[in-house]
Image (cartoon, rainbow, N blue to C red; front, side, top):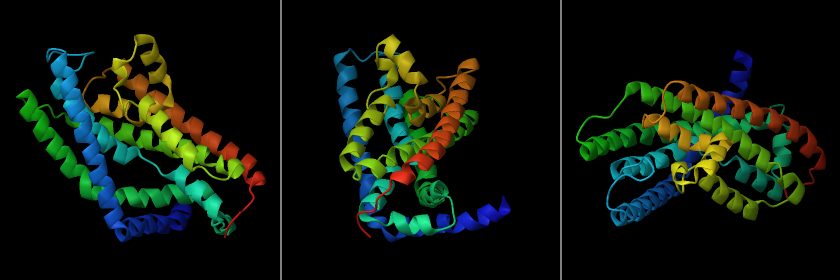
Length: 272
């Protein structure tokens, strides 16, 4: 284990250096996401105002405000560009150089992306959560912060990230066959955004659809961690959703191993 960590630790450093090098692009990405949060906030504010200002589907407006901005924070933690990176490497041929290295293809992506996230979370996560708690306290009139919910939220986010990473890797392997993933990635992001509760909380869907969507892996990418942080789940329900995240993380890890063995035989490099 120590030997493997020694091999992959430099990829964490590479990920951190990449983020630091392209910091202007990173800043604009954050600003764009924050702008999207405020747009969503004003839309929901209008929806609640038109409904008389009361609770809707178990959410009050203060809870919806927390949900919107906490979903932004969660998306930063669990987000993964693995499918985009795999697709681009297949398209331009640089995947050939990665295949020559005596290391795991999936692990190099994982550790490089972890380096990116470590730098991002070190700069943004704590300040954003503090601001979020101050806003939540101001909106509700009482301190809502729960240390246990925070710890369980972070655990859920780690599991959500692993699900998203291995799912994205599996999706990226489609590029070995169709060669270019840009359009498919756009479609995937829209569908996953809806199924994860980033577009509309799953509680606003018809009950039958909500039950189905909660069992799918995509709810684990946003909705489940956010609901845990907001203390909406407890007891057996909490253990169920955490167990479901563990199941999907293991399932996509196994699927990524299987697809790699199948797809690498169909690889034909176009560029490079």
